[in-house]
Length: 206
Image (cartoon, rainbow, N blue to C red; front, side, top):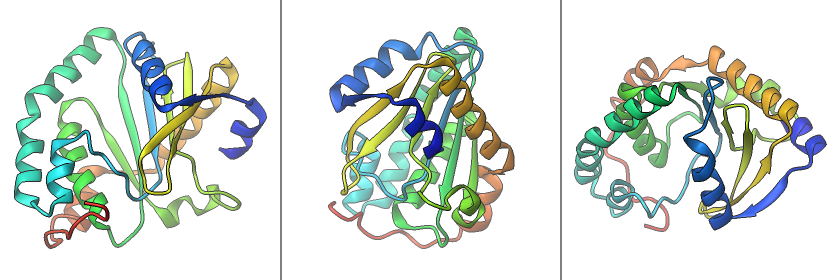
């Protein structure tokens, strides 16, 4: 991935610029679809009430808040259907599953019921892609734009680098799609690696 990004030379965006740019483009995604690759093993998500409950150590509340958002996820899926594009995510996971990912995979498991399918790859399954650098955090919006999403050392969103060259966007999408094809369905991964885990501890910084 790094070879494509370095060769393309994108545009750096601050956090507010990235969010505004993403939101402005999202609902005009074409039938190439929305593709996301997540590699980091922990993020700080203070905008999520469920994450805040998790970070306080209240696992029961965190799960209840995820469940309470089902109508929102359902509406989101219906709106994507009406717009004519799919939503696909690849989640790379270090084993054993850490506390943050235990929470995130519970969230993604619910979202996957509403037209947001997820495939999981253990980190040793992407070693061939990481001979020099870890895989980047990537988001691809159809044929129009791709972003390498940037985070602080603590895991807070810090901005992104935007790429709009058509060949670069297509190449990044195809690489994420290749990882998706090789991944495991979230439900079977969750049943084997997550379902039996004890309640996670406090999120660092929570």
